[in-house]
Length: 431
Image 1 (cartoon, rainbow, N blue to C red):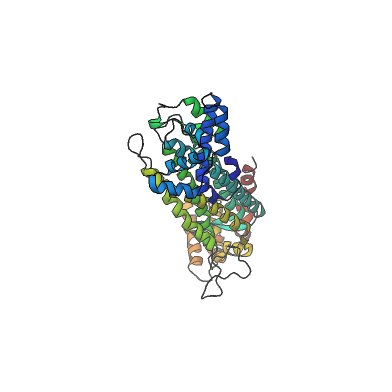
Image 2 (cartoon, one colour; image 1 turned 90 degrees about the horizontal axis):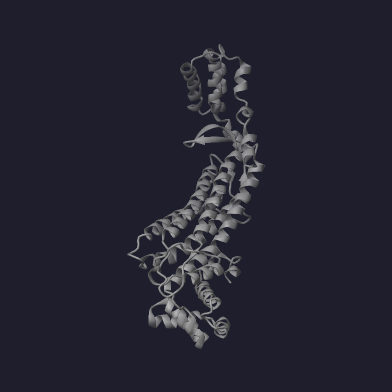
């Protein structure tokens, strides 16, 4: 039934063909429940199962007259079934079919997104292991801070996406709810047992209560979750865009043979995938706002949410699927310039080792305020000169060398000091 679609492209889930197929799956599940309880004769059930079918063209023809897509769908199916069609849609209202079918579509989409997230996590983890000891500079406010490794940077991404997977799995479980409760959700013409049996067949949990529609906070939470995934992708994409800047050039997106970066400038290699991902994240986040606004419906139901959901749910699942696959491709083909990472870490004679010098001076008895003043003076002197050299400045400063000898100053510039706990950070990801 629905499972046959889970290996197909995400886009197929949201086609009219698949939508009406899920409508039919819901109707058949309800018929099976009635049959199990003895309310549909076996010969009629056999006729329904054998003849239940639909045609998109015929549905369109009927809808042009009746102006109601579910009625058009049912009329089309009834034409195919014949006499036994009187058992179809017994006690149901349109939203029973629409909302339960939507849950099935989302469930199929979620299997693909969960797989995508798992593959992204694997790609990041593989790259993080490879660059466990690749020295790079850490930045705060976009400014050089202290040495770290590129692998540690990637572990922060890994942590984000592992959390994303955990959140998504919980969200996917929550939204896998169906309803077969009739007008205003009171089971006036249908038994709750029919709902239970039908949802069991469909692999859904019956909503604890439905008001002719499933409450839209379910869907808002789902779209917020997709927006979180998109925003996590963008966080990494923005980092990559900065690291590919010409004056930084620590990483580059893979550049295929024959690829061109600019119609005017042959030298260009642009971070186009990362930029595309940043743009698409804005769309997914915008869709999540519409989902929040869909929560407020009139009384037990209206259909103001429906028109928006026909756009935002298919688009968001398709976009997140695309974004995760494109991001994975970026990670798998990332060009890492280790030499530039090391070079950037040592700009201006290693000003980023300033805290180590500060602490060394304090350990020798200098007050923190005086030590800070001495180190800042030498660091800024290097920073403000095109050929500035922090280490040379320290070795030439009498106030410094009276306290620290040359070897002690050299020791402050040992990168290994800053990386001594990298292994411990990695061990946390092995637990």
